[in-house]
Amino acid sequence: FDFDTPDFIWRFVKGETDYLLGVTTYAHFLEEYRYYNRSVWQQTLNLTAEEKGKLVEFLMENARSENRTYRYNFLYDNCATRPRDKIEECLSGNIQYMSSDKGRTFRDIIHEFAAGNEWACFGMDFCLGQETDRWINDRQKMFAPLYLMSYMASAVVTDIEKEQRLLVCDTSTLVEEMEEKENSVFAGFPFTPLQTFSILFFIVALITAFEWKKRRLLWEVDLVLFTLYGVSGCIVAFLIFFSEHPAVSSNYLIVVFHPLHILCLPLVIKREIKKKRNLYHLLNGIVLTLFILLWGIIPQRIHLAVLPLSLCLWLRSIANLILTYKKTG
Image (cartoon, rainbow, N blue to C red; front, side, top):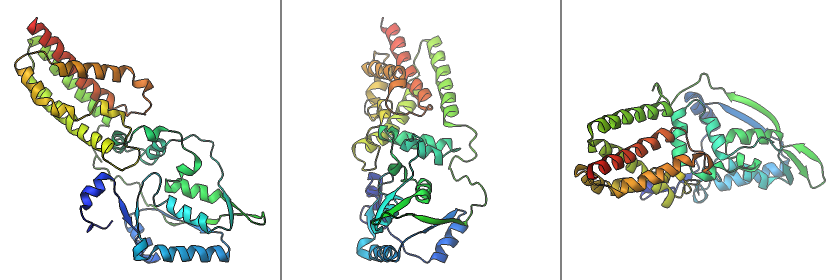
């Protein structure tokens, strides 16, 4: 990135991610990956002299200062798809990738490379919408570098004289990761998102049961919960309506997490303190009831940890409706 770009932080958050090509020596590149304990694999391309010349010429042209910047898209135009596209442009013939029969979605592949890090999966699922749950073809799977490497290894080039050759003649490991590493900010945290939010629901249920027994509302609980859900909803709403990041504009979590929780909070708390009926709790209860009942047919794979989170807010709204109804007759 060019951190000197005007309004860099705002542009980055909004999704205007302009990446800058960096050029370094091969030895420095390998040493950097060795230092950070990251694996490096090398694939030797089986190119003709003419194809090699075209590819080198492109690389030199692309490294010029006026050509280094491009708008990054982590699903459709990234550091894996760009090299593939340019290699294809340099070939004197057609390329065929060996098809995989295994059905995959973008979310499947993202989860595959975040396996074992439940909090990372939850965070990505929180932001990514329905688009990532569509079945994708072999070419789209190549957004993931390791998938690209696999497809490249089996790719066949057919030249204009109908002669065939493998695109890659050799694959070797130059730097091998020495040990499994855990870089998550939640490393060492003992609970998964599902366990954490199930505990939260249990606590909310206990508090609500206490309110039920005492026939009184603890409005402070709703102040905290609705604020947290509202702040989370601002993030979801921003991604849906303003962000240029791919696959975030069709997120059904907007039903549970939305800015109205904060915008309507003063009125909600005011009516709770006065023990008056609250239209917001009625509407919220209806919406969350439908969301929970229709969970299985929503065309988006929603992280299971969202269920106890939904139940927390649903329980608060239903309890408020019942208790205020009894108070007002």
